[in-house]
Length: 323
Image (cartoon, rainbow, N blue to C red):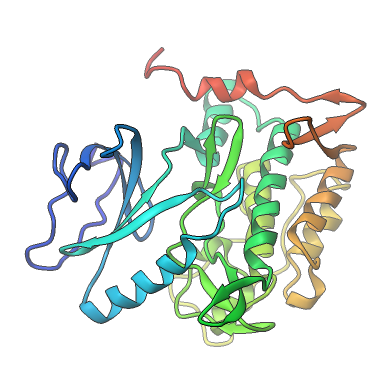
């Protein structure tokens, strides 16, 4: 397990020890580690209610930064959207901030690897478009300056949109990991830190978010999941002061997909789409799809009046190991 998930552990003396059976709070018992990101570990755990949840452990360095992170995370708890992974609670244990979240089946990265390694093909375009339309819907909700915080209306830039942070719960994609979410009050907002650099918009390297930074990351995510490759060359370890990305290489997708990707990946934020859904709408058109809602108010991707099927592919992720 340790070789699969390099540990993201707190260096604080006396930090809570993450191990199966440990109880970070009354009634919560850790089962097993489910994964890790650049800033945290996620564990499957039993909750006092009897349900199984995910506990995310984010190392905290000192009381000041911990209090600031807690305030930021607590401001996001009231946000409710069908395609945002719900966070139920947040608290502290020695050395960590702990977030209680819904337990998911897998990530879109898992799905991509399944397709490539077991099926020898990319993710079906109808399935990929369905999931990323759902994520685009969540991002537009999150980004819109409609959320109340400290007496004013703000938007939030997620700051780390990537396949690992898009989780699958049944047949639904949900955007997770709000550790870097930043409130925005206008078209430009200083960003205190970067997310995953390979997915980051160019303005982030100059120290600010635009209202369309998440859209850039969504476009990179689409390209990676569609092709298994990045549209840009690898970044140098140390970025020069006047760093700028080269133009994206989009040759691995069809000519019809390239114009919407070019626009969403524009180096100037104002040249991108006004919303993430508008970007995905043009991607859908490139594949001759359209999006509709079914009788249960769920998003469906339709092509030639035939509903796309996702049950078989997603169920593959739920098979027992080595089945």
